[in-house]
Structure formats: structure tokens, C-alpha cells
Length: 339
Length: 300
Image (spheres, one colour):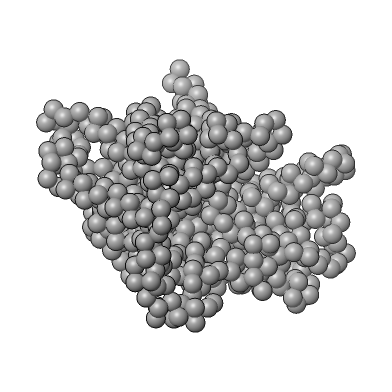
């Protein structure tokens, strides 16, 4: 062992054990979160609350996966919603036409998403900034138009109707509301945990470096194109998972799932919650859905209310809520140290 | 898919004329909206996501003015002037606060105003479809050119839009103000150091962009139905135009708008269900082969 290698080994050991420790901590938090969410039906019979959590799962998976692109890699995708729609439609179509068990359809949908994401990503990720945003938007609208015009296969503007069959698998009956709820929570927690692992892995730090300085990353021997493509496909898989949860929830798939507004909402959720923390998008999801639900109940002009709230975040806080809170805490921490 | 209908149309001069004029008016209206968008991006470096709202307000202002005064000219003036004022206020009060911020923040402010403006229109004019009606002066026999039917109003619309394009092109390249604007787009710090109020230029450019979109809305009001949210599809299409033509390029916006108009009018014959898809497909092809658009400069 040379002196250099010995030195590296010494410095690396504590870092690695720290990472392992953090992984255990994340798994623990995930388990607790899942236990809390899964025991919710024991305490409340409120269908509305469970529905709310299911919708949060679908949108949360989608928004957090978008943050892998926007927050961690600096790839502002305006078309990420296409994978949400693709997931919902692929899953719905496979279940309706082939009648396979749900896990098979789940894996098959992920495989289909991966193929699409690889092709679209390979074209998109070499473009920079605003052009990347526009090309992803164009692909999203292309998929949306295809869904609308291929009416014999996708149901056109009516969407996939007639319900998605949900055969019982290993005792899990997804047509049972509580079973569906627990499954959605499990998918959400598993998805979040997996994305957290990606974000904290060496690959995740490579992505941050690409975001901050792609040229430097490239000089250090990182294949930037390949790393961007990898995260594009990974993010697409989780967005597709979100789409599948949504399809299971509404027992169908509608063209709106693939419309660009889904991507717009995803971006909005990220800005609302904050992109510099891992759970920011999750906070944003809960905020947006709460806001949507309460405001639409009180006024028909919910656009004005929502708009004013957005303005408050954009012009007032100038960052997402969780970013704001995190910064406030670190300021307090610093001030405490200074005294 | 209906290739026969498309082929049949291409071989008949009457159909060719009709489809081309309808493509031209779609293209010209798109151009007016898109050129404002591209101008604002070129000078302010802001993607004005709320640009469709100006188109919508232009149409509603024109309708109200027409109902009050019964004068078509005043209606056009109200549409253009009203949105210009609106653009100036919007830029000075809100957009000017987020220039230094993240692109996403700017988008978010615009997105908020898309929601707010749509609801404002809903409150003032009601949620239902409205129609301005064709002014009496244009309710005359349509012209027949090579067997194709061309309403005279279409000719006026194309003429006004072309005039705007020419005035804008010459004004920007020849006049002193045009030169200042181009200089501000290139190096705002230097322009400001030379004693020129860049804030005024920014506000002016935003007002100009809003005015052009408002004019497009006013011109479209007699031939299209008015509804809150009408700006949205126009916004998306004018985005495609600016991206295809190249962000910041006026000539690009003109060519892009005309191409898109023709794709729409002929595509609706050959691929009635996939017309929108054709536009996006075209955008993908252009962007993949030339990411900066047909007339865009290479990104610095």
C-alpha cells in the first residue's frame, strides 16, 4: 500500500461508516413513517382523509422524482408529467387487455417507462437549460396528442374507461379501500427511500457536481451525458410509479394525466416545498393538495386565491417553505454559536 | 389519417387558396403574440408565461369597446392600448422584482398571474363563451380568388399583422429607440452607464409585447369565441413558434408562425386528429437538429 492509498483509506473509513449510519437512520424513519401511515385506518374511518393520503402518494412520488432532476441535477424538465401519464396508461392498458397479476403489470410498466425514458432522454439531455425544458415539453405534448388521437387503443379524450381490473394477489385486494391505501403508502415510502438512497449515493453527489459545474465534472472524467441520462430514466421510473398509484386510485387513466399541466404542477409543488431539501417536494405536495381542496370548497374563483398564495411564495419568501424553514433554523443555530 | 383528402386539396386550386389563407391568418395572429414573447425574452431574458393573458385581455377589451362605441377602429385601439398599459404595470410592479431570481421563480410569478387573470376575466365578463360579432363594414360578399373563398376581414387581418411586422422590423433596426433596445438586450449595464434609464426600456418593451398580443386578441375577437383561458392554447402555440424560430429572433418568429399556421390548416385535412401532434413533432425535429431554433443565435 502506498502512502497515498493509506492516507485515503484512513480518511474514507469514517465517511463510509457515517453513510451507513445515515442509511440506517433513513430506513428507521421510513419504517416509522410507514407504521404511522398504515395504522391511520385503525383510528379514523374517514374515507376522505385516506383518499387524501393516496393522492399525496401519487403526486409525492411524482414531485420528488422531479426534484431529482430539478434540484439535484439542475435539469429543469417541463415534460416530466409524460412519465406520470405513461405509467397510468401503460398500467391501465396492461391490466385491461392482458389481465395479468398486478405485480407483473407493475414491473412491465416500469420496463416500458424505462424504454421510453431512455429514448427520449438520449435526445433531450444533451440540450441545455431552457432548450431542455422546451424539448421535454414538446415530447410531453406529443405523447398527449398521441393518446388523444389513438382513440381505439387509449379511449381518446374520454380516457381509459370501464375500470381497471384489480385481481387479488397474495391476499392483497386493491379494490378494498384500506388495502389500496396501505399499498399506496408502502409504494410511497419505498419510492422515497429508494430516491433518498440515490440522492445520498456517490452517484447523487456526482449529480450535484454536474448541477454546480458540469465542465469540472467532465474534466474529472465523469461522463456527464451518461449520468444525466441515468438520472432522467430513474426519475421517470418513480414518476411512472406515481402514475400507477393514481391509475389504481381513480381506476382509470385520463389524458389530463399526460397533459403538460401535470408537469407544471410538479414544478409548482417543488417551488412551494423547496428544492434544496429531500422532503421539500413532499411538503409542497401536501400544501398544494390541501390548498386546492380547501380553496375549491370555499370559492369558485380558486385561481385568484391560488395565484396570490403563489405570489406570496415567489415574491415574499422567494423560496420554498421547507427551504425557508431550514435556512431559518441554520441562521438561529449560527446566531446561537456566535453568542 | 386521411391522406386522400390532403392530396385532393393539394390538387385543387380552390381548396389550396382557402387552406392557405386560413393558415396565414392563424400564422399571422400567432406571429403577433409570439413576436412579443420573443422580444421580451430577447431584451429582458424573461420567458413571459403569462403572455396569453394579454391576448385574452386584448380580445375582451376590444369586445367591450365595440359594444360601447360601435366602432371597429376604436375597438382595435382599446385592445392594443389597454394591454400596453397592463403590460407596463405588470412589468414595473411585479416582474421587475424577480429579474435576478431563478428562472423558476419568474415562471412561478407568471403562472400565478395566469390563474389570477383568468379569474379576473371570469368575474368581469362571466365564464360563458362570448362573441364580438363581425363589424358591419366587413359583412360583405367574400372574395373569390382562383375559386377559393376569402372573407375580406381575413385580408385586413393579414395586412395589419404584416404592417406590424414591417414597422417592428424597421423600427428595431433603424430608429434610435430600436438601437437603444437592441443595445439594452446586449449589455444592459453599459446602456445604463451611458445615462439611459434601462427600467424604462424594460417597461416599454414589456408594454410593446403586451400591446402586440392585445392587438392579436382584438383582431381575433370577431372571428373566434371569447372565453376565460382562451389565451392558453395561443400561449403554447406561440411558445412553439418562438422555439422553432429561435428565441429572440423576430424573423424567426414570422417564419415559425407561418409554418405553424400552414401545418395547422393543411394538417387538419390530412391528420384531423393529430394536428396538434404534428406541431409538436415539427418542434421536436427542429430542436433536435438545431437546438437554438431556425434563426436563433448559438447560445453563448
